[in-house]
Image 1 (spheres, rainbow, N blue to C red):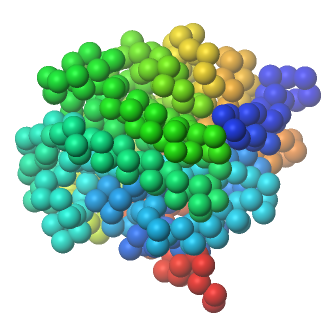
Image 2 (spheres, protein in one colour; image 1 turned 120 degrees about the vertical axis):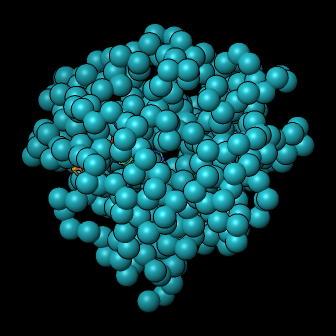
Length: 414
Ligand SMILES: Cc1cc2nc3c(=O)[nH]c(=O)nc-3n(C[C@H](O)[C@H](O)[C@H](O)COP(=O)(O)O)c2cc1C
Ligand code: SF4
């Protein structure tokens, strides 16, 4: 490997104020280990294992900016009460020389919380009216955010980032993709506004960029501030790669320290996100009926014949690479040393790995040591449903996680 482009993936990288020991980032994979919203020993152990396995930066998926910002009840909120337990998690990551990134997310209308769990009478979104996601949990209507609510929301993201810093995180990732609240502003599927926050892609990016600015002002000198977004919406009528380029330009102009290049939306185009079809047999297992029905419906609407290919988002990502100079993390199907070599040769500063590190958190060390050059992950996507299991997200061809650890707070003595 010495002297190859792949070797450069094992050299340090600076993003904003953060220096990373190498260019490998564990991308957010909803862990399903914050049962009842608690930051647990299981969640802390999951990320400690990633750091011990060699990745420079591990992303804690879906840290809600407020309790109303959750999609599921089993997601942690970055509120004051969670700081001590998050601190245990970040300490564990730091012990192994890694860094930790909190993925700051608000669900907007993409929430499965029922009426007893969601304080707002209607979930907030870019535009109001019929909420297709709410059909199954009696949340038929969503509310278009007004200027005051948008200002409050930007402050909410900034406050969550400040708590992330208190909890020992080294970076925050603003989730602007996949159909969550900020993505609902970016995507024409959700944004039908006529004011200065809707219409062209530049206007649809205005609120997400304002949030980015507030977070940079609050923590940008101390933490890396990263944005994850969908390069395309993966479906006709949604954002195209030209929009994806415009989004990258807006993030660059807004001062983001790095962008993580994802694709697709949870509801409309999940296959575009994963680059391989979901097996029908994998649908409908979650206990939450609304989610189970949603997955069942998707098994008819999503293409069934998409065959995984390594670096499947490469063509889109190269368009973004050609348009901006800001640091970019290539994401999407890196499963081998050859995939690493391609991403580095293509000029990306970092490589984000999802399933390869769910399959084996030690994959980065193994690549560096030369004990493997190919992940054993088959891109079957069955780990996605595992997030609803008692043990949380794990690879189905490995042992499940210890469910008991997901019922104990990370900072509990025993
Ligand atoms: C089990 C699972 C859960 C995921 N949850 C999230 C999430 O919470 N937030 C997010 O931004 N992406 C999530 N993703 C998407 C991954 O971050 C990544 O974009 C996707 O897996 C493609 O990368 P890969 O080919 O390296 O796996 C999830 C992926 C998996 C497999
Ligand atoms: S279940 Fe395992 S093999 Fe299948 S996609 Fe997930 S990590 Fe890869």
